[in-house]
Image 1: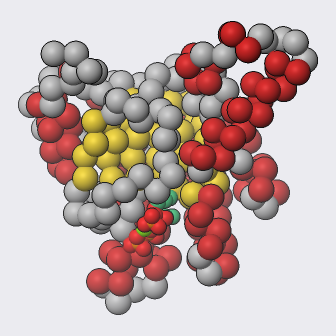
Image 2 (image 1 turned 90 degrees about the horizontal axis):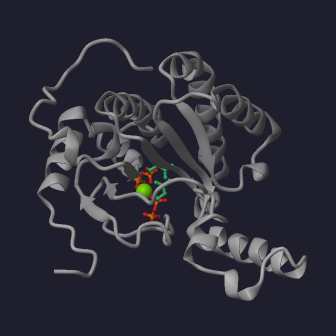
Length: 247
Ligand code: IPE
Ligand code: IPE
Ligand code: MG
């Protein structure tokens, strides 16, 4: 996964001013393939190489959390051949890369309702989480069958259940309580969101967690999003003035 050769000079980046948590909407695989007269699935395969590059560079930079949107709750609407090709890709890539990710101290995690996937997919995901759970390096969250609205509904239900069981009073429901019932429990909110492919929308991604994130949109398709492009994005992040409502 991580490979050995370093392609870009990272010394221009100020290590003290990097995001702690980067969230990415990996978009444009289909259009990348179409431009090359290839089937859409070829775009998804090419996208896996970008995932490896971005994971490695994030880890090298000491970024603590990387969250990648890999399959939304709305992506079930795609033709079933594409959905199963995506599942296959998840299984094959993870089987192939898991050992190296583990050696690189990566914590593999998922966000979303993975139980709705076929058993083989669930097994591979659960195994990867279990194997890497005590690692201390970067946490990589793969958002799989993830939708922010359903995540919020789930959190509300969990909280209501606690109230019903008298484990929690209504007065104790606060922002922290909501955060602790999202899939990202225990993690800081993303401070930087990147979306590739020119689309400028959230597509039901991390609606609660992105409240104060800086957004970065690039026309580059995900398979073409290189280390140089990532560096460009991070440099832009470092030039943003974050005010959080203050002056
Ligand atoms: C993003 O690429 C990957 C997934 C949604 C799984 P797309 O498949 O959405 O590519 P475009 O947007 O059609 O180009
Ligand atoms: C968002 O991309 C989901 C993922 C990247 C997994 P989509 O391509 O599915 O989003 P829309 O349809 O353009 O909003
Ligand atoms: Mg898309």
